[in-house]
Image (cartoon, rainbow, N blue to C red; front, side, top):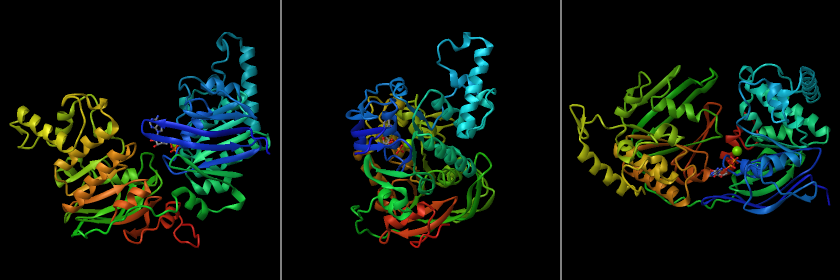
Amino acid sequence: MQDHSVEMRGIVKRFGSVTASDQVDFSANAGEVHALLGENGAGKSTVMSMLSGVYRADEGEILIHGKPARIRSPKDAALLGVGMVFQNFRLVQTLTAAENIVLGEKSSFWRGSKWIRQKREEIEALGEQFGLKFPVNRPIWQLSVGEQQRVEIVKTLYRGADIIILDEPTSVLTPGEAEQLFETLRVMKQAGKTVIMTTHKMKEVMASSDRISVMRKGKMIATLATAQTDELELARLMVGREVTISRQEREATQGEPLLVVNRLEVSADHGRKALDGLSLTVCEGEIVGVAGVAGNGQKELAEVLTGLRTWKNGEIIFDGSRVKTASVRGAIDAGISHVPENRMKSGLAGRLGSVDNLLFKSYRTEEHSKFGILKAAKNRLWSQELVQRFDVKTPELDTPVQQLSGGNQQKLLFAREVSHKPKLMVAVHPTQGLDVGATAGVHELLMELRSSGSGVLLISEDLDELLQLSDRILVIYNGAIIGESDHEHADREQIGLMMAGIRHREGSAV
Ligand SMILES: Nc1ncnc2c1ncn2[C@@H]1O[C@H](COP(=O)(O)OP(=O)(O)O)[C@@H](O)[C@H]1O
Ligand SMILES: [Mg+2]
């Protein structure tokens, strides 16, 4: 039997009712780049966080170099030679790169300049050896994201890690920087390190790894040699093959086109193109699902449609008229409601209670205020009724909503958005983080909107959810729709491939 440098056996980790890691077995060897592949939410970060001591496993055991290891903190992990580079870097912005790397070494700031020079040289030598260049003497805030990542990697190497975990390292890199990183991974592996990289991007895995372990919904599905697999097989493993989803026969409720988007072009925050000629139509009484890997323009699409972001080219026609400018108020008044991706950041005001949150978008209407004064008693009754109807469990109507569970927050948000009888609902990952019961509740609400003649644009990374609810599924890739499939003919495998940018079974990349 091979001598694994890392072996995880029967690892279980639960977060409330979610089993993020369900009896996971995983092993990696010295001298390999091992990719941990899976869709968002599959459990990759959770499993690696247990190896690096950030989380403790509820069950299971971990062996490092064949010996049972007690990893109860990142420090324990570091002593065993395990270092992790997280998605969100943990660097002190005002200290230099070199200072960040030696930080934590005993009384490092009391030593003389000779010591500092020596450390700097050590750090530079490591950077040189592994192809990780960055200005050692500049404060972190002056470094690009790619450079900061290199600092993080050198930090783990400097601290003597021989098992190095990178969590979605390319998500912050340009394609060119990603290539460079893969080169570094190769050098590390030649130096005998164990390199583990989590990612949800198949192409990268094929380009950079020796072996691939695939996770899906908290379970380890398979471990394969990269040379003996291909993107088709990986797509199947990632999204699952079984067609267990209940796609009930359902009544067609589709009416007139409600939203028509033509060749939309939108810039992202950094000036990159986020939407690049995207076109789609949503009809009345229709749920249109948008499938895709995060970061392909979903966020910007939702923002444009709800008035939060402006567009450069193309047109948006809503309910028969052309939308002229981006305006949140305009979108609300036109009848577009929004269930945003991050409900606590942009959907709800955490410190306020249910009444205020419910009134957020309609307090100006005649129903709720007169001459600018809120109709307090009436609004309370109205809120009470909504809270009951949508089954929001809150101790008091005024309990700050940040104290409610995720499921109840989401129900409250839906209550508000649905209470306006929207013509179109733009729902982004509406069931993310919810348990089974709350998820079913949200699905029911979306179906009710559909039968009442509203249009729904459902942006989700959960293929099961999309297959179950959508009349049509569109696949977004690099800011455009690259494929479409209707409710009856939706094929997981095909959609999974399109999500990876592959249009046809023959494997022609876009
Ligand atoms: N700290 C946490 N609290 C509650 N749930 C969590 C936490 N971290 C992860 N989860 C849940 O565990 C599941 C797996 O998440 P994660 O390991 O981040 O997946 P991945 O890294 O593959 O995208 C998800 O359903 C996620 O919502
Ligand atoms: Mg993750």
